[in-house]
Amino acid sequence: MRRSRALAGGPLLLLLLLACRAERPAAPAPLSEAAGWLQAYLRLDTTNPPGGERAAAELLAGVLAEAGVDHELLDAGDGRPSLWAFLPPTEPAAGAQTLLMLHHMDVVPAGPSWRAPPFGGEVREGELWGRGAIDAKSLGVAQLAALVALAREGGPRRRGVALFAAADEERGGRLGVERWLTLRPELLDGVAAVVNEGGSNRGFGGRLHWWGIEVAQKRPLWIEATAGDPAALVAGLRRLVDLPPSWRVSPAVRFTFGELAPHYNDHWRAIFLDLDRFVLPGGPTVQLLPGMATFFLDSLQANELEVLPDGRGRARIDVRLLPDSDAGAWLPRIRGLLGPAIEVEVLLSAPAVEASPWDGPWVGALTRVLGPVAPVVPQMGAGITDSRFFRERGVPAYGLSPFILDGELMRTIHGRDERIPLAELERGTARMTELVALWARGAH
Image (cartoon, rainbow, N blue to C red; front, side, top):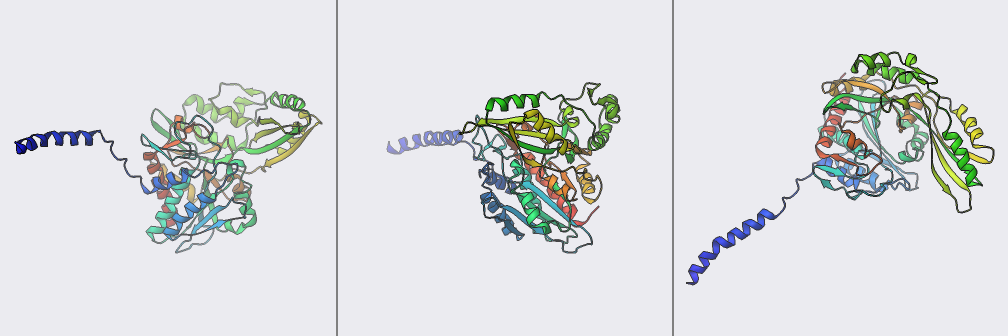
């Protein structure tokens, strides 16, 4: 009898074990090497201010050390280091032969109401979540993976590749790129081109229509206004905001829209090829595409209005100038509208510079690698990046996103729930790796 009971209980026990196993959630798929790097990167809080980029720089340095890539922390002793790495050519050719890959380690504040911890690096439904997942730690990981792959490959290299992971971009770059290009100008020796954030890829109906490569951008004029009477400051800011817009077609905009023209229908092609006819100082004579107006206007926005402990009022004024606008003419205008009782201090400005040339080996590599997927076109960016510091020094800089992301994901940049699909992280990393390998081999 004991034996019969034991045999009868055997199948029941087996069914219970199988049921428990079926209810147990499947183990998550292991992350790729690049995704693991990005997850660790996202878990480091580099919110600026205060920045605190040291842990991020050390994380990247550890990966480079394992790959045998020479690198150094650019450290001024204030806890805001940047990272520099260089893989020299093995068969150097004459002239400027280094491609400098640039991204920033700091991020903007996460803000409230995220559906996942902004510095948790969680994977949800095939997407990696965290502040910086798109802007710009994923780009940094794609660059890191490209450099590491080149070092591991160990083959002949006719051109060099450098990596610059910068601090402080989100607050103007003065403690990052600007600092180190001033203190260490030799870092630019031999640099032929810079690849940075700022690219804008356009797709419709689930298909990529073009890769947008940023070759020019608006320039910052950041101003701090302070007044003993906060009400007087508010009144002055209202006069600024009510300033009538003045429309203008700059050479950079004329060039980039001309390059975009072949990729639009007949109506828009005619407008893009003759902008001066349709965009007049008083405003456009035709309905423009959404977001298009910013390319013809010097924009102004007042923000961070606050009352200081001593009772004074303070505000930040963010002016975005077209590439060739006269910043010197704007300052007297702003002072006059604010009024004599308001103190004005320039926090950040940038000189006028020409667009990066749309030719050369790096543009050729972009066309060769990305062109089979969609056309590669130059564009002007409405935002500002660290690329301006290189263009000011005569070094061409190009904004590139190697990732194809939809509008919903792009809206998470500087917003809530920033994340990147793991599958697109892998594809973008592969694109960057192929681009950098093509450059290093010296192919045209």
